[in-house]
Length: 66
Image (cartoon, rainbow, N blue to C red; front, side, top):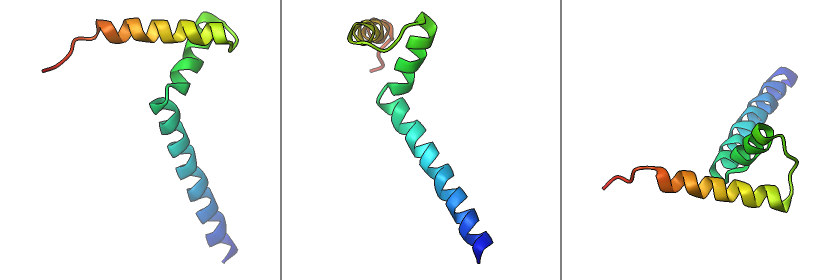
């Protein structure tokens, strides 16, 4: 019984980790973290504003379908 509970906990933790990672990608948290690492910056209002500007420029460059 204890082994089954342990496996269930591990499964739930794994699923929670996947959901958390997906949400971070959806809401640009992961992209912002990569931006900070790439630019070697610390999080700040100025850094976030620059991230938003860079993101907007890259989105405007993408070809639109239909």
